Length: 248
Picture 1 (cartoon, rainbow, N blue to C red):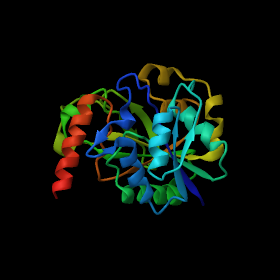
Picture 2: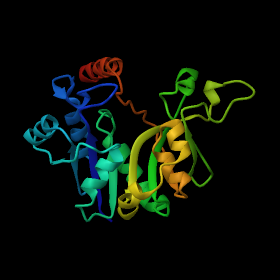
Picture 3: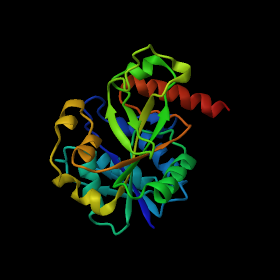
Picture 4: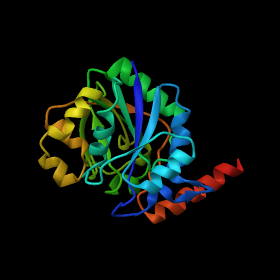
């Protein structure tokens, strides 16, 4: 079964314009993501999807594949759909362009697990355990709860489940959602036709559209924490992480 990865990279982010081209070390953020994805053995290929010529040129000049997309897409998934409509692969993997530290082995393990255990679900994604209260109550850290079959019950910016007897970080069952998605291609192409849901509008979480329209999301727990970059402050933290990794 062929899996092709698409990395949406938008220049005009409301919270952090120009983010994909910000440098971590000597390399643009989007190229760090490309480097990681290029090492994945579970993929038949990948490409960056962007609406900005600067990002397109940066990616192409580094030797990676890129697609120019329309500028009027409301979401990264809409951008994904435009590119996927020109592809024939059975599965499309969405890797965010602001996740420069994702481990290739984690992506490979996730893809393998989904194809083996979760392909009855229209979508697959990942999570990792939260160990501190600050992340658990932070609305910028999206939480997910699952059933015994690894299917998502709900995603939320709120603390779920609510700890009535108090928060115990050492024994917590709180999980961060990692924004990597694996879609059945046919389902992905139909995604824009699904009605935008009340829950999606309330939480500002697009994956809730899948669930509120009756779709199922398989969730694979991974041990490695992910670090997405949403703000200039996050970039500074990422630069420090990269510096420390370079010293190892």
